[in-house]
Image: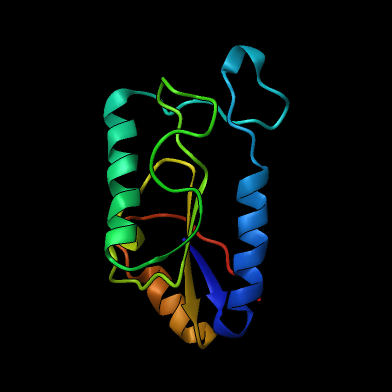
Length: 131
């Protein structure tokens, strides 16, 4: 999850879209430096695909990526680098750990609200706040 000041939301969407679209997804044996490879197994791949679809179904703004494999990779557990924006903290993609190349952007109006949303998780994850 990435919490974004609401007044910077449009700029953050553009930056995240460009970053996701610049990510190379390649076979590990031929990958360029900085490229990503496949998801670890079929069950995890299916979970990532289901969560991406759930984000779409629940009304998050799909900024980049989506379900399915990246262009040119028609087999294997490769997922498209995906960015969602305008996510609410109640959406499944904000509540579940996706463990795939998916960024969930949640807008906030105050630092107190961002901290409250960041702490509203059942996971004991570490976090970083800059702003």
